[in-house]
Image 1 (cartoon, rainbow, N blue to C red):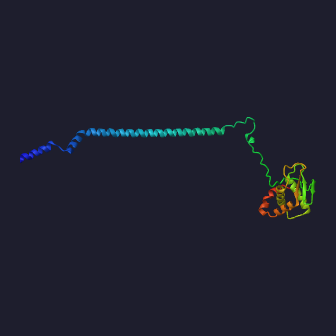
Image 2: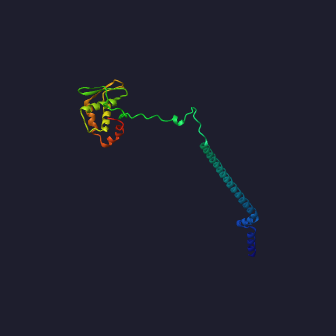
Length: 223
């Protein structure tokens, strides 16, 4: 029996377990493993530092490029401000050459500024149902309508009509008169008395705001 016990002890001694083998291998190769770990850590640190340095270098490079761009822009702005503009080839000021044309005079209502009173001596003819006005130099349909109204009011006075009413009436007549074509010297236009009466009645339907808007035209006309 003792022989069997001793034999078992020998088998355990001769055949170590896998854990014992790993421990033995670890003890034998510990220096190598530690050296490899140290080398790996050093290499990792070097790689990380190099990458960080490259990123910092790129950032610094980008910053320098941006500063150069801003500096160049500032220099260009300063140069533009101090440069004297070249004179146009024709020797004239460019501002003067681009001056917009005078706006076209508003046609409606056509209130001619500072014209002579319609009671001046003009060629006019009255019929049973109308006033026939003949154009003189510089006259338009509005002038003829103004004179026709004046002749009508000589026979049919109406003190309630203001200058603003008369501006509206003459424009009303201009738009509704049967005359067509361009007005020239000696052109005759017939204004019916019924049309003039219709224009007067329409002017009396204007409200205060509408009459006020006509003041800028009536201020330039002598009735």
